[in-house]
Amino acid sequence: AEYMGDDEQSVRESHVERVREFVYKLWPEAEVHVYGSFATGLYLPDSDIDLVVLDSPQHIAPHERLRQLVELMTVNKFAVCTAQYDNTRVPIAKMFENQTGCRIDICLDQRAALDSVRVVRQYVSEFPELRPLALVLKYFMLERQLNIVFNGGLSSHALVIMIVYLLKYYPVPPDLESVEDSLLAVRLIQFFYLFGCEFNPVREVVSLRAPRASKGFRLESKTERGWFVLSRAHDLAVENPVDRTLNMTAKATLFAHVIQPELKRVWRLLNYACEHMRNLGPAPSILSTIINPALYYAASKHRQAAIAAAALRPPSPPDERSAADTASCTDADETAE
Image (cartoon, rainbow, N blue to C red; front, side, top):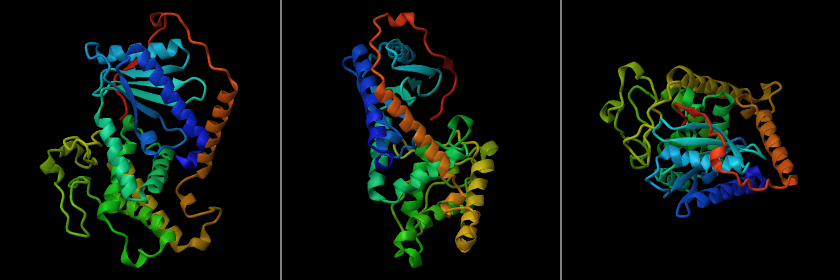
């Protein structure tokens, strides 16, 4: 992504190539693919690199294959494992690259992840507003710690689908269509209003299946989809555009009591800021009333310093010891999406 700079992009690509080398050493027929925000260009300075390994030996259990790969990377001092989640729907190893501190998540056999990348790239091409809106809203969620799926927050992928839902089905008011400089601001406020005030999570499902229409489109309700649970009636339901049987936000338990009220509060704050632009006080812009850019710059500066330091250090020589001599990483019970 160009806003990150060439160094960040190059370092991430070099990490991907190193992982490929380790995978090919274990399983020459396997393939390594990038998915997630790095593949779609919607990543922040501290975003993970998400990798999926395809065509590794199926006669070896997934958790054992992950363990072999983790131990090889650890022995060669490329990265350390911070967690390995075996007892989840998608087993995953979470790695921490030793020189730049980049986080790398590795899973196996998930071809649907590549389908998701194609879908998001298609929408990024179709809707020019998607990328800047996604970056701002991802940072907004990160700043408030509302993006931690393990704790009931929204995954980045679900957030992107919600933005596409807005762009696809909710047109810009006619009197603002010609105001190019304000289009992103209008869309941002629309997002906060739609999901903070108008959207009814008890009944509605966020789905991209309905044909584009200016009005009158109807989607299946949560009850019709079989996703309504009385004890969690106010939970958000976002249909996976690749596998429409999956609710992407089944674990987003914070939506009704934390996320939606915060979106509503911010919508009101933005409306007030727009109406009183000359009375913002110390805030340098309207956007800075809802996010703190200093945190972004601090994260970006830290990443650039790590990259610069890594460039001055020679690469560690391969360790020829057996991977079996290295302790495997910690197991856990659950993982984030």
